[in-house]
Length: 252
Image (tube, rainbow, N blue to C red; front, side, top):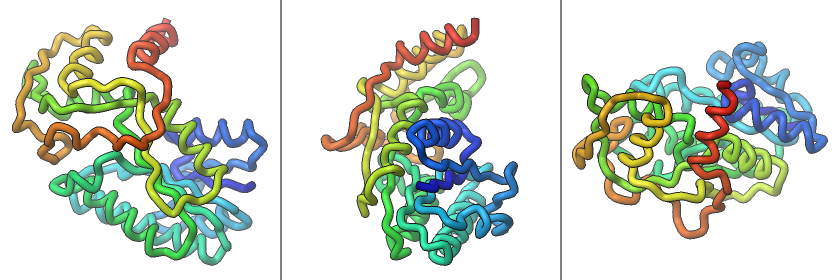
């Protein structure tokens, strides 16, 4: 199949393109760098010509409430219009476990708006909900840092490796549209504070992680299990220590 990956040069997209190509698909990495801009429409019709599947793993460059909402509404609308013209048979989007529960976050509201457009498009679809990536431990810490202190709510999280996320995306893209959400996660459950503390320690980062039940997570006030998937989630095998050890090995 011809599978166009929007955001195909990023962390998840580049891995998904490689996996799809290795399995014999014509996988096309589409991004502003390759002349495909879903905000302006530049290059979109040409990129989608003859496509069977469109995978959207793009992300907003800004997480400010209005900017992120404008990004997902505009880019998704552009894709849906182009997909109808091209006769695309499957639209797959990557979203976030718990997005429907964290509506006080502007980012999560934007992801929900994106999902609504996909559901109402009439194009067969799959929405993959992934838990947080191990790769974003530092970003989470940075967003919650005050001086040398990282303040985080001690809620549960079941994170996963970007490599496993890309596998989930590639498999779903090559499969039959589900017309539903498919949740994926890693194998281990942590308190968010424990995960970030371990991640910082592994990096030699001396910041102190402090439990703060009122701390917000990218704008959202969290309850205990909002970041954890349901019992039917597909669980991928890479543990945090396996991922962390691989990062150390790659840096040598």
